[in-house]
Length: 124
Image (cartoon, rainbow, N blue to C red):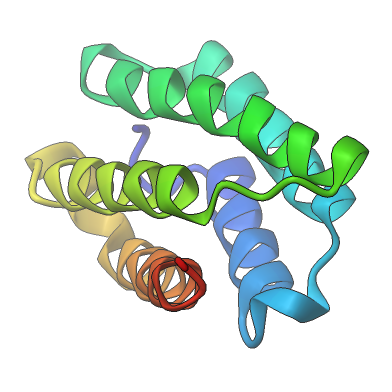
């Protein structure tokens, strides 16, 4: 991650604003759009540290797409992938390179934790 990269900060803010609240109020299209933006951003500015995040997002994307297209939601799989994203984002936040973006990363982690709690609570 690039310290104080404005494009990255804007994407974090967009992610937080999109997913801040109840997961049921966010459409799968919104989720897919955010995932695609993150994948593009990580491809542009990513590094070895963020490669795992991109890989997890690549696995999350078809889960969201299936939920949207076929109304089949695998909350357990989604919760598991969100947990991976939380751990990976925490690892990025702990690096010296991201020290300038601690506030934004903390907000992103909080949103991911909220999404994870909601997905986990819907596991039957």
